Image (cartoon, rainbow, N blue to C red):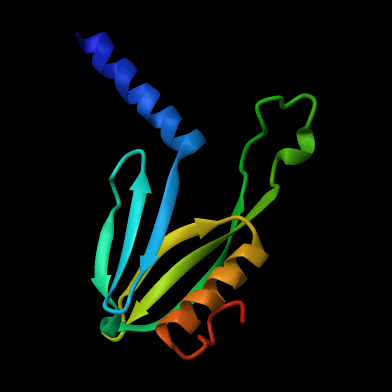
Amino acid sequence: AVILIIGFFILMGMACFFIGKTYLILNKDTITRESFPLPFGNKKFYTHKVKRFYAKEKISTRKGYSDDEFANKSAKGSKTVSYEMIFLLYSGKEIPVLKLHEKEQAKYIEQEVENHLKLEQAEEGLG
């Protein structure tokens, strides 16, 4: 029985990694973030509490070698850039809702959400 439970969690983890999706649903009064296939991280909050929406560039550095360390030693110390999409509430709290790897995609989503919610353009964002 324990092996089946462990196998289930491994299978779900792989499913989330390969087919995981996150949806950001905007309407007049609420913003909802939904994750699939696992519902962990689903969140709903009110649009009137949102001051700004912006993308924050995050740079990560690899400390070790890649899986094939002998063929690709240049991977050590390589940098990965991602873009965290953040709602800034009037209370000052930052709520990260998405993590993207393409700058153009982050810029597009930032502009569309700002337009939809009629927010002023964030100074922090990609603009």
